[in-house]
Structure formats: C-alpha cells, structure tokens
Image 1 (cartoon, rainbow, N blue to C red):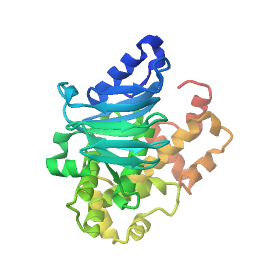
Image 2 (image 1 turned 135 degrees about the vertical axis):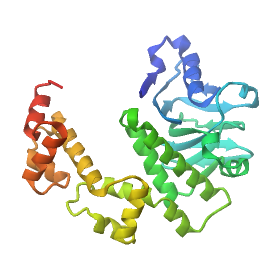
Image 3 (image 1 turned 30 degrees about the vertical axis):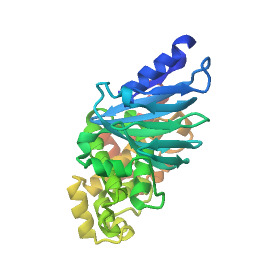
Length: 320
C-alpha cells in the first residue's frame, strides 16, 4: 500500500538516520547532506506497483550521493527516472553534469556513482525500476544517465504526464491493478531510453510504439466530451478507426466499455464529494459526458447496485 512518511514523527536527533534509512530502502544506500544538522526535513509518499517503485520526496537535503563504497548493499541495481517538481537541481553521473528544472525529466542509475544536488532542497517525483526488467544494454543505460530528456520530444512529454499521474494517485494504482500499470510504465521508460541513447529510431517509428499510451491519455483528457468516440479519437491521432481498434485490442481495451466505466467512476467520485453536494446529479452526469439521464441512471445502478441519488444520500450521511 502507499506509505506516507515524515521524519518529523521521530525525535530531532534521530531524523537524519531515519531519512537515510527510508531513502536507502527506496534507492539503495546513499550519503545525504542536509541544509541544517539540527533541522532535518524529509517527507514523501512511496508505493510499490509490482516491480515499479513510485515515490515523491520533499526534503531540505542539499546533496544525495551514492559512492562506490556504498555499492555493497543488497539493493538490486535499478534505474531512476526523476521529474523535478520545484526549484532546480544538478545530477552528476559518469562524468556528465546536468541541470534539471521544473518539469524536466532526468535518468540516473544505481550501478555507477551519482550525486543529486540542490541548495534549496530536493523535490522530485521518481520511478525506480530494476535494471534487469528493462532488458537494455549497459551502453544504452550509460548513454542516457545524467541526461535531461528533451521537453519537446513527444515520448518525453508523454512520460512526464504519466509520472505525474502515478505520483498524484499512489493508492489508486495499487492492489490488483499494480501489475497492469507496472509493465506499461517499464515499456514507456524503455522507449524513452532507446530514444535518447544514441540509437535513435525514426520519429514515426517512435510515435507508433507509444500510440496506445497517447490514445489512452487522450481518452482520459477528453472523458467529459459527449462527442468522444472511435471516430473522434482516430481523427485526433490521424489514423483510421480500424487501426484504432487494432491498437486498443493489443492493449486489451474495449473502447465503449472503458469510456462508460471511467465516466461512471468519475460521477461516483463527484457524488461522494462534500464540495459537490450543491451540484445536481444531472450536472455531474453531463460534466462527464452523459447526455441521456435515464441511460445514466440505469448504467449507474447496474454498476453500483443503487441509483445515483441513493449513492449520494448514503455518502451525505457518512455511512461510507
């Protein structure tokens, strides 16, 4: 399950040791230098999605350093994909030094010494994936380490949005859905690395490899559009409807079922929110793309065993 942690929960004299222990469990052993020895600040959220570790870290640490002397730990070698949240940091690995600004992605790995430095404190989302799961050569990994991924590249932008989504919903993706999220995430990171490792494929081929990801991202972003359909999605991606269905089938996605299910889940969430109690049921349904209220009510009841009004009433009285 998603684990929230904050070293302020322990005595101030123990906070540095606590931070070292928590970070070591995520990344392997590191040396951490804090802005103040007496005011150690470090907090975050960590979740495990199959082989994938997703973490958000906020700290007043000035440097996080993994040296050769620390390689004796038992942590399986892994690769990190970091997304800078605020401020800027510097990542140093394999004789390369890279400045990373908010919104930038950077790759580094635990098989070689590295340093992450930020005078204002480290604030990042990151993924950790075992190197063995990527099935990439050492040269490709080395060529990508301490490199800021081009913001204008479509695969980099897709990866950035995906990492933000994972970090924003740690608990959402755990449990039965963990493996379903982990493997596509690994595939996406592999595509990013092969794109930036000097073995570049033509842009058209790279776009083809990430088409399913881009389609699903478009579906999430346009879920409230009542005109969302196979035709509109295909047109947006400049492909035929037939090819769209082929791509979705490869991902085991039924378009109509996916749209209906996620619209219903969005409505259910809004009906449960105290801040949305002033909204009518119809306005919530229309917000998420439903145009026929009778069909919406029937679909909601089939999925959740009660009407939208009954669902809202139960939550309004705090019974769930």
